[in-house]
Length: 152
Image (cartoon, rainbow, N blue to C red):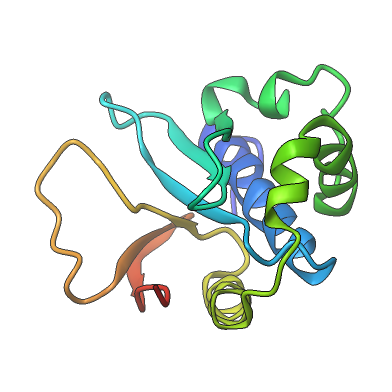
């Protein structure tokens, strides 16, 4: 595994964000949802984090590198530390997501296990994609796989 590449750093940063959401789910913020995909150029992975009913979303792009959500103090943060900062820096999203959503939380936890160590979801892109078989997951140095669609 080439851990010196820009591609590795992008996958690692994206995965940290996905794992941060898993950490938040375990802390009781189960209503958090992600919507992740690729920029129009296909170079950068993007994600919006929020709830289906609350208008505010937290946004991250791998173009930001390890300045997650524009934070300049997160370069070496773990998913746990990112989760702690998320709760402080996005208090309205946190409050709106602090509810039970067992089915989604369980789906998300299973997705993280199945796509470890560096898989990232692609729920949208600028080309035709068939989502009938599930959500494509881009894997670092491996073929793309699919995971089941999340519960509604």
